[in-house]
Image (cartoon, rainbow, N blue to C red; front, side, top):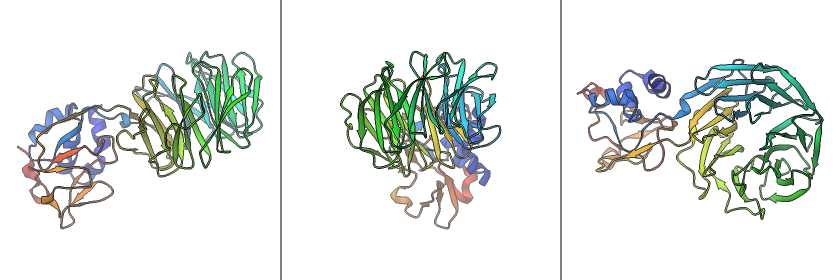
Length: 427
């Protein structure tokens, strides 16, 4: 596992030339990884991380590829955290084991793209939404038990009530339907949105349904009567995704206006200013089980993590996807984020990487793009290569991985042997 993650993250540097195995890969390996502990001391004249050295490997090293590659529209994590399900453009639902990455099931039955998936609370069933129907699958056998029919357009979102007795669906037919797990007909039809219902969420006490729409509004409904309780307005474009906090006190929303907004569930008022940071539409949002942090995915190809109390971005954007990030989910234990993309992959990211710090900094680099005064002739490029005065690539910094956390990260280059002298890096 240690070697696989090392090669996967540092492949760009290692493939460029063998010396960068020592100059650009080994120094950035987590301090508690077996590779770092075994070999780093043998190469004393390489770059050293003086502050912000990550202790463990980021979980983003786990990448799941669809068995029949197709853009990923939605992801869900089973309540026990052992499985990930995804719905994709090819009309299939696929299930993987979170620990091994082994493909467990491929479910076929829809005639159009699968836009939403969800697990039952006992993890014995998977629900999927697509072509005007919701399919219910047996998790053990993959058997299709029954379709739920009633919507007249695509199913965009599915949720399960906290007591596990109801399914809630939002559709491109502008309606929301509430279904019983026991019978094949809708108990309630909620009408009020004037355009596509992109996302639904259910309060933890089961009393409220929250929906977001291309009509730029978020609505809170009484889950028993279907009455509209509050309409939240503030976004200036489609509201693609919503989530509600574990204590039911706030709602998080992501929009095509490139912002995230946090709302008070009692007053319906926005809490603070919109969160900005994505350079594209915010297509998916999620809240951690303890309510302390939030995550978002965007068509800028990144995942971002936010402090729920302050609204501050935590660390750097998580990069790795090469196309739109359509969907995200946070694990039940709050340890990792799962993201699905139009690049036909699913990635797992560590939500809380461990960091240690050191003092007595010398010749510090305060980010991947700034250098000490003695090194004004050095430049860098967007891929993370540090370029010497003659254009030679001196070292590679993994700026697009979760190994570089924030602006407090610093490097010590005081003993760095590079260029034609690279062979002197060994003891």
